[in-house]
Length: 320
Image 1 (cartoon, one colour):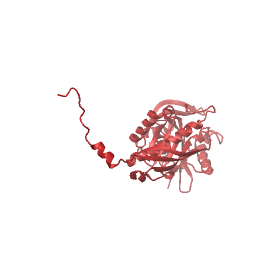
Image 2: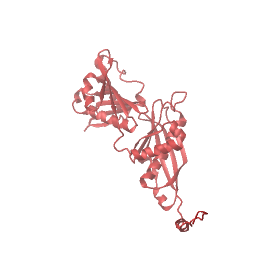
Image 3: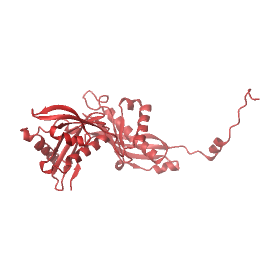
Image 4: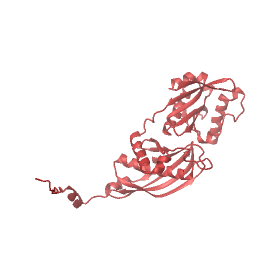
């Protein structure tokens, strides 16, 4: 049975690149290595493998701006063509693009592949360029909507809270691109958050991670119809690698330990979670934190009676 996923080891990546070279470069006399570029580490990769772990099809997604991306290096083994594997790669890359907040997806299609992409909803914008002075390419694009399971309304409410109450979040343009109750993905603008080395500023990474963790707790409270004030109690971040491209943060349910039931008893709740900051598919920073949810004050019977007691009508000089 064929499976579509990202390469998981250096050996799988070598096989992935090998197919890319054999299909897209070797027939035109290009050397091994010409199938790669400087954006490999910050891109999303997908491949289809068979039951023997043989790579049958490959494709890559890269973010060109906060809300736009490009699909490149699509290749299917000649022996596996006609099996719908190219479509499977495209659909997998489109899903990742939706989760990363990409709304405009582009690609440059070889003339022979124009009809294939048009069937998948891509619009042609005419001739783009010649590759190796002989292969015609045509610019194509597709507008993406949010992923099916994305809870758009609750995400927009949280995003507005951030932008209205935390000026830095608005300046960073922190956005929620995906939340389905089990996974939260956020991202921010690259240009505002880069340092003098043209990589992402460490403070921006920390801010994105902190708000993503806080946001996860907030969305869970909304889902459970619970109330409480969320505060960051303890946090630590490890920076593993510089981020040269566009970063995104991810919180997954598997990394969360929480007991929200204490809030029903008027007690504070403690949530432990991990936020991973990614560059492409590589973890560039790991943020581990504890958030406290301060329970809403439970009113005594006396306070309730006082509030329910009708207020006396004020006397005025204008009463008859």
